[in-house]
Length: 278
Image 1 (spheres, rainbow, N blue to C red):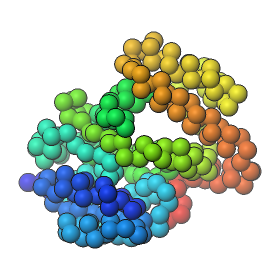
Image 2: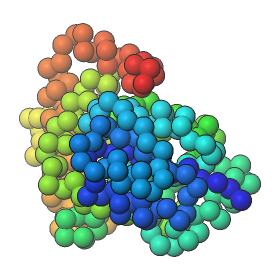
Image 3: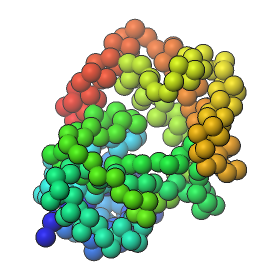
Image 4: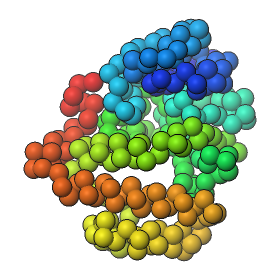
């Protein structure tokens, strides 16, 4: 039987952690909690579920600690969830069988659809659908750079789960979205040499931000329509947040010093966690 290590990251997460650990306790063989020196009951809750607890300097986002957490895992296969993520019931039931099948067939990672919920528990479509993420993988099959918004680099084959298996992203952090966006934009500014992605027209809009924020927002909406990406009323709100985030990021990147540009270049080349030896 394939054994599974579960990993999560916490920082004053007492109001969320019990629900998460209750959710996974019967489908994994080990629980690892990397905590950012919480001052509430987070650690006590983790301890009550028999978790291995490691306290680390908080960065404001979990990515710098992901490689550290992998090194603490006892088993080859990892399930890594944030405290506001849950597996659908069918995936909970079939998880071990899926991992065993992927292991036999030589896959090292499994990606799946993530359903992002709004504060009123409605699914957010564009710009966050379809949203596929890597949350299940072999610990020696991936590397995390520790940079914000930088997913794992996979060394091997990835299995794409059908849409009947999905991840639910709960709206716990909705109230602090503005603060979170600014923090993430700041870290992205100091960790990325430059921003890529999208066609030449999108790159032109991004390069001209923040002056083109409204045209860029309308451009994003138009691309969803042209690509037949499903949208709903929430798409207007969250696409605007996407345009706003990119505008803040461009302001920070255009005003950063030469020293920060050089540091960002090194982080882009070597990795944030690797360069700082976290």
